[in-house]
Image (tube, rainbow, N blue to C red; front, side):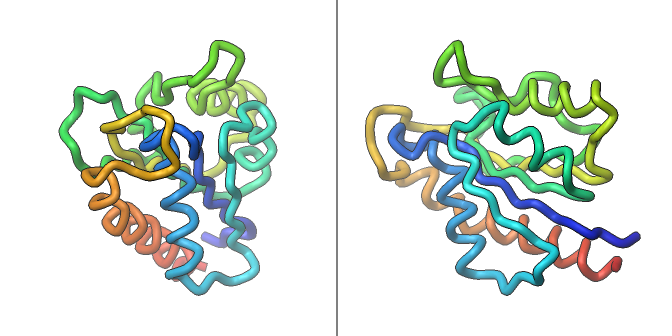
Length: 158
């Protein structure tokens, strides 16, 4: 199966500690993986609805985010396609569109990617800080490696 466009999106607010995990994972991913022109990395930050085109315009997408509830075990979680939970993103503001709403909107419009993967962790600290907590920082390499392995698998299928 050929993937003409693969998007890798990092989500989160880098000013709220572990909420910035997705962006930190994306940044490390870009530094450790040599990517062909068909793979695009997007710092999605807290852009909400403005990310819809990045979901709808690709054949496959990986999203890094601090998306797992705080009470979950401190580890890397990965959800693929139908495994995606119905509600998967805590909004930092009532005006922000969460990732679950983006997926729902893309599905409603009939523009879902063939493959979608969410790689996330439960945040430990959400206070005002530009640093990840020590516990979350330790999970960063595993999350990035998971993303790399998935992209390599997709590229090998081409």
